[in-house]
Length: 100
Image (cartoon, rainbow, N blue to C red; front, side, top):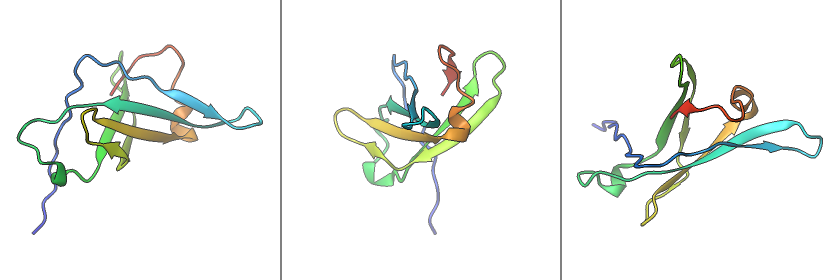
């Protein structure tokens, strides 16, 4: 019987930032963010199938979106790469801080 486990990543001293993508007509097509993380010693690399990110506002803690990716590197520099759809990217404002 397979069980799903939640392994929260450790974001030590990082301040990830979103960058928005536009097409040739200057229309928003999405946003991207790369988040470095580290794993606890008790976690095996083979146990990780994907990484989820919750985005919420800092001031009111309102949930904006939950995004999952399986695009990540587990090497010396662990990095998870998230691509956000335009609907989510429209909710993000430049210069605003968000809880990740």
